[in-house]
Image 1 (cartoon, helix red, strand yellow):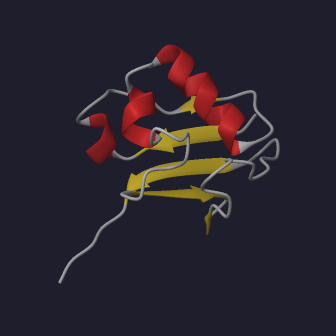
Image 2 (cartoon, rainbow, N blue to C red):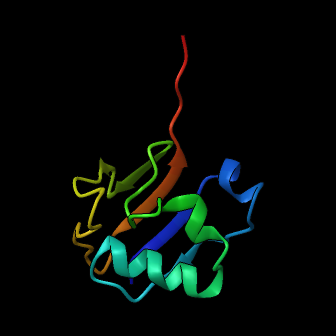
Amino acid sequence: MPRIRFAASIQRHIATPEREIDAHTLGEALEAVFAAQPRLRGYILDDQGALRKHLAVFVDGRPVRDRQHLSDALSEDSQVHVIQALSGG
């Protein structure tokens, strides 16, 4: 099953342990996490259901392509990482 991990910087706000998820898309994986941690939804998704701009999400080491509909496919051994995007100057 795919595994999903949330960075420590996100877990400071809402504890979300790493877990295996029965999902075929990024959206399905996130919905499964939100079912267990409903408060996390507002931190990860905007009011249109898209990934918030301050987040970077990687599936198998590659940035997600579909930040709006979350349709990136997951395989049985996919690794999903959700981290806060960094900016600086």
